[in-house]
Amino acid sequence: MKPNNDVGKEEYFWAKDRMPILSKIIKKYSNNQILSDINIGMCLHITKETSVLVMGLSGAGANIKLCAANPLSTKDSIRDFLVRSNIKVFANKSTEIDSFYSNMDKVLDIKPKIIVDDGGELHKKATARNLSSVGGTEETTSGVNRLKTLSQEGRLSYPVIAVNESIAKQLLDNRFGTGQSTIEGIINVTGVILAGKKIVICGYGWVGKGVAKCAKGMGAKVTLTEVDPIRAIEAFFDGYEVKVLEKVLPENDIFITCTGQTDVIGRDHFDKLKDGAILCNAGHFDVEVDVNYLKSLDPNHYEVKDKVTCYEIGNSRSKKRIYVLSEGRVINLVGAEGNSPEVMDISFSNQFLAIVYLLKNGYRLSHKVYKPPKKLDTKIARLVLDAYGLKIDTLTSKQAAYFTQ
Image (cartoon, rainbow, N blue to C red):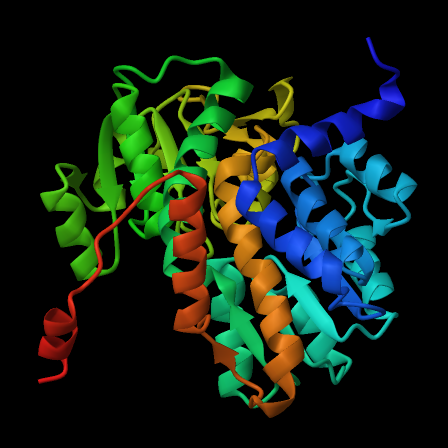
């Protein structure tokens, strides 16, 4: 067995071997040192997949400071490996929210030219400090929504490419990646069997679609709740029950929030849940389940097992137990290892190419949120096809001309 201080390095190579697309991009830009002496500030989940992106950017010449996008998602072995590789990392697995935010300030102290974020928190801080960066990228739906609000209010101080709005990212990362890793997280921390369980998924965006498909594939009885009529119809025609949350609270076993919204399951819902109900969140922030209100109902809450907290609510005659996983934080990263290397290969390739694009074009862009340029999406798609040995047809000249008529 290798010594413990080699664990992070081995995890890095495990991920890198399964990320051929990003490795190909890294090799190209490491050869020409396109990022030479560029300061990049990053706020990402510190996982083995993230280490491949960070080491690749560093290999292409960038100076990097990194902090965690979630107080509980940092993998210590990866953090230690990056530190030994001369990457400045500010992260500690802690529930102390003050240190979580102060680490972001340390990252911004280098006045980065490019800011890479997962959730929008680092961008918000950079905007509050009025940093004149060349540009930034954003990895999540929640973060993109926040940044669009800042842009509409005229408070965004640099252009941002919403990597999350890449079709390849939404389809593969959000849907297939988070779908699988969310179910992995639930099984890892609870050990329950999903076959036969009645599961409610709140939200049928890309993440909700993936979680629903995986839960159904495991034999669960899946019900969807939605506020968007189009998504509700889509869920119905995809074969799921679609109901109002209020009506399904007493009869279901597991509830998974996938919305990016606050108080999806809150003070109006807890007393209607069945005894033993399990609540968890697959969205970026820990606000979808109102854990603070549960704490006020049961100050003596306790951990049944690691990452499973029991809250006893109600009076002595009708007491019930509600279980919350990973303190309401994103279950696929706190309860499992996050999305697979193969999936993050595509997302982080998008990140890398977006960073290069911003360095070349950021000075000419307005301080707004942009979708990734179509040519980047197409480039990623073709790299994916090549990596998997897939061939597709091409239009004939007559067919191409037909589209222009």
